[in-house]
Length: 387
Image 1 (cartoon, rainbow, N blue to C red):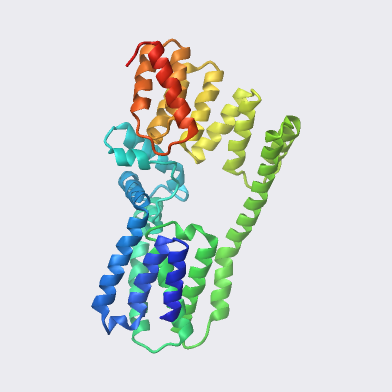
Image 2 (tube, rainbow, N blue to C red; image 1 turned 180 degrees about the horizontal axis):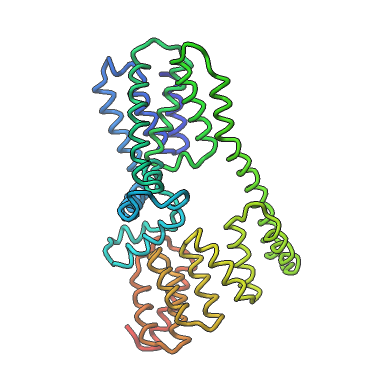
């Protein structure tokens, strides 16, 4: 219990609410409070859990928005799911459709962001793989319940209790965050799981579980190391670009594009931004479209709109700006770019309307850019005598 309380204090110190909740529930199950003063401990736990959500209320409400939008993903794909990585590649399209229907509150508008996680690993797993995932999770939770009932009914040493506490804390935290996306948390979870399973075996099987763990995790660690190496190589190209060495940056991007073992979306994004900067709009269009199919977000859509403007495709640019606005409606920049497009193409009435909408938009974060945009739009509206 002292170990559990220490872990809980560390979780509070680092402001990890998911681990806080998981730690309290673990203490409730593993601790001896189940037999003595359990009602007081339960009530205290419930109060503290509610307080942890009150600390970052906006973040908690933001999760509720994600759950609300992702329900539509499950409805459309309940049988087989959207596939591995399907949530990150499709969620923002559903968020765009949600805000396009105008059925949202001001709070939801302000909380919307470019999101790639469900902030609930089990829910994301269900959306990804549908009905089979539901059956698998039901079997896993039922088996876990049976194992822990047996665990609590026998006398165990300190190490199994620590393993049980850590395993439960991470498992519960996964209901409120993308815990298993972290290789470190997943490794700790697997090790504690194997330790618990080994505790119920008559003969130790640590070597078997360790080999199983390596077989499952080692390829992912290799991929992570490779991805980190590629990311550093991309950063070198971006540094050369920012420093003005465009020919060197171009050579680096081309080398990366032909040599990378794993084609990262971040390379397509960085290369697309570079190509737009140097005026190679057709090539930039290809790179950004490829990235957008795997990694949709409002910033990429806005970049694609700018590329279409440069290619003299104002109608396509207009549609893309409107998509960017619907996807994350609290952003001022897409509205401002669309406002300027309408002015350049002499669509004054549309420009005035989008300008008025921008000035009436609640401000999420007051920055110098937002202030400058609002001033410029207000000045244009005054020039056209529009109130």
